[in-house]
Image 1: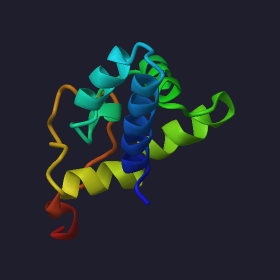
Image 2: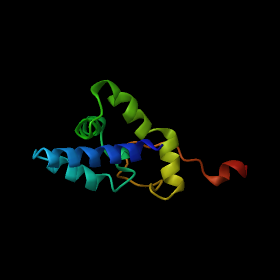
Image 3: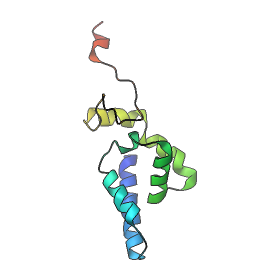
Image 4: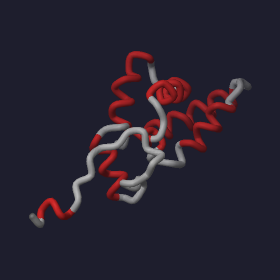
Amino acid sequence: MNEFKVIDVMNQAMLNLLKDKNKNYEKNVKIKEYLKDEAFFFKINKINAFKILQNVGVKQEQLEDVYKKLISRDMFYDLLNRGKIKADDENLIIKYKIYGNDLFNK
C-alpha cells in the first residue's frame, strides 16, 4: 500500500480518537488539510515532516524509515507521472533528476 495513504488513514484515526477522548485535535485537522496535497512531504523540511508523522501516531523508532518512503525516488516519479508534482515546481524542497525525452534521441 502507498505509504502516503497509510499516513492519511492514520491521521484520520488519530483525529477520531482525540475527538472521542475530548482532547485537542486541531493539529490533526490541519494535517488533514495538508495531506490533500500528495506532494506535501516533498515541500516541507525533515523536522516538520517528523512532527507531522509523530502527530499521526508514527512511533519514534519508525520515523526515519517512514519519512524515507514518503520522499523516495519511486514516490517522486509516481507523483510526477500522475501530474501531482510538476518538474519545475519551485515549492519542492526534495527533487530528483528529471530525464528529458531527448536523452534517447541522441
